[in-house]
Amino acid sequence: MGAFESFCLQQLSEDAAGVVEAVTDADIGPRVRPAWASARTEIRQFDSPPCFPHPEGTSESLTTLRRGVAQRVIYCRASLEHSGNLAANIEPCIAAGETARAPPPFR
Image 1 (cartoon, rainbow, N blue to C red):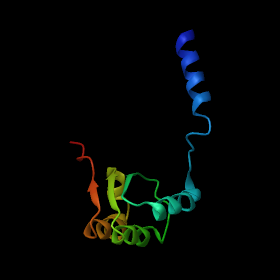
Image 2 (image 1 turned 60 degrees about the vertical axis):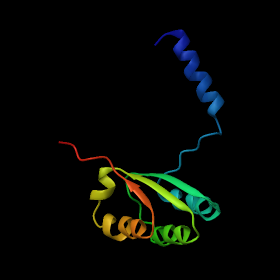
Image 3 (image 1 turned 120 degrees about the vertical axis):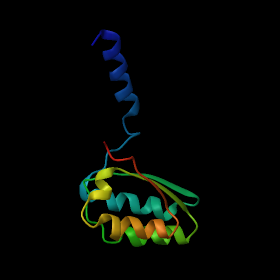
Image 4 (image 1 turned 90 degrees about the vertical axis):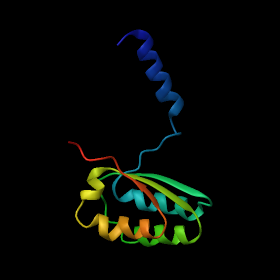
């Protein structure tokens, strides 16, 4: 990497400090809940394992849909294949009006 590229990466990381926050593991649910509760028109989401147990997650999604908030979710293949996730979490939300997409399987 040249000096210019190094400078650009350094500036980017300094400029983005405090703007982007990575939240992982058990911290995801408590951070996402207020955002979902305050959404007024639409939620867009990427769903990708690892899947952390969040027992209230599906009911919170259904409540949000009942409030008239559109939900558009892109599920990775692993989310669809994660044991029980499709039937317990994804399909009820789709039935309630969620717009769901997933990439086609690899051939």
